[in-house]
Amino acid sequence: MLNKISSLKNRTPKILGQEQAFESAVILPLVYINDRINVLFQKRSSDLMHQPGEISFPGGKIEPFDSSPMEGAIRETCEELGLKPSNIEVVAPLDIVVSPFNVIVYPFVAFIDDVKNVIPNKDEVEEVFYVPLDYLLDNPPAKHKMWLNVDAQQDFPFELIPNGKDYPFRKAYIPQLFWIWHEHVIWGLTARILNHFLSLLSD
Image (cartoon, rainbow, N blue to C red; front, side, top):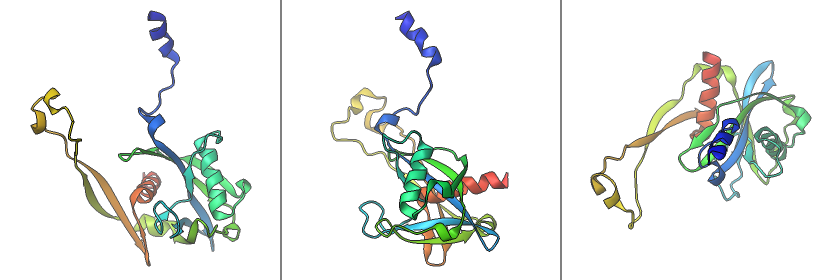
């Protein structure tokens, strides 16, 4: 047993429960338009099963054959925007997002070499649009709170915990951010990742 404990010295930590989570990777794409840096957003196809019609960054599920989250992010971005890996220059990874809905997202900020190379895959992307980076820096999002409530199964063993059903579970919330750009609403994980990136530029 001591040998097993000692073998943990060189262990690389992971996120607890990572193997049960849905892991995805996205790229926050930057592109020059008329000598001005813009952020590319995409509107997901209305025919998709998950989050149809929502605004997102390009990306998707990390597949077993992806050598890294970054490779998965580039592969998915190429599929959705009609790009080649050579059109994408990754600048840096952003902070990993662990959502309370068992989703882990690995975001990366990257430059696309030329806006003319962006050809959306209509099966996945309804449209793309661009927001000037300086506009996003100068216009903070609206901020709201979404509360998460504890809802246990009927057979939950409340008798095993202090105070039973009156246990003072903490009330948690998810901060929700909203940017409105013309008819588009940027919110959810996309807004959180965007806000994180903007905060790094403002430090």
